[in-house]
Image (tube, rainbow, N blue to C red; front, side, top):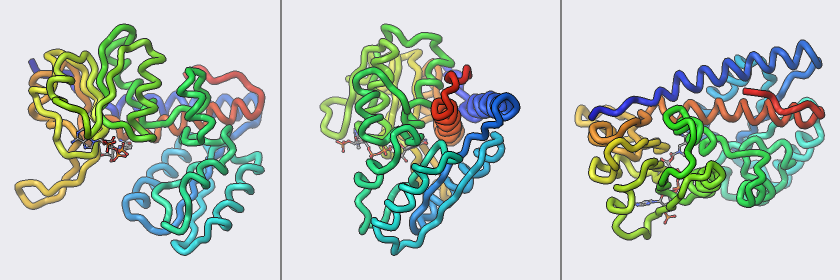
Length: 294
Ligand code: NAP
């Protein structure tokens, strides 16, 4: 069997186009332009590329982008003061704090300072708790994108057996809650899990959010399963050139799986598209408008 490739790039482009159409409609009907503030502290090369891409896609969707670049030496109090201003600014519907932050700043304090209604990353403890009790308001972008991709293969995830490898606060844990909400039966695995290949081998859905290049091999995948690879790992190829690979050995797994996301071009593009979705929803909610149909 050769798996169907889940084209995250095309699916994300389609979602962005639907967001842009809704933004256009909101502007025409209500004079409302959703706005997102991106706050970056210091210079992390990976963050720079990501922020540039984010800003471009926010603008392309017809939204406003407010970029704040602060020096590496910024004190926590200065960052908190900026967040307080953004919380109070009615033109800003979404606030995104680019992580990681420099060591002098306590990340948890900063995340908790963002207005939960503008927390388009879904990292605020209130939003984390809402997701955990099954009444989500702001859903973290990467797990949301993962579920959307899985649903392009399975219109419903109800009753499917899923394994999520990785228990981070930004991917694995929220993904588990989303899958429970979809009525999948979920197993979560991590670095202390015993006999991981056998645990994965009978699952209909396999989500890998590990950060280990090509760890998941063909023998981990149930024939016909759907494999969603969140990993982004920089490795040096046999030709000594750098390249990006996922957490799944794509060449091996695609021979067994029914459907699989590539890296790059799978989950990655969905993350920013879902950020646009969250910003649009936040703007509607802040203005007493119904949630947009996307
Ligand atoms: P993380 O915080 O480092 O968490 C990694 C998780 O994988 C941990 O729960 C860890 O277990 C588990 N793990 C590590 N080695 C393992 C092993 N050998 N067997 C089983 N489990 C293992 O990473 P993350 O932030 O969730 O990110 C995961 C990957 O996704 C990274 O490659 C990252 O770059 C990528 N990512 C992509 C996007 C996107 O937009 N596509 C967004 C976010 C992250 P323990 O908890 O026991 O340590």
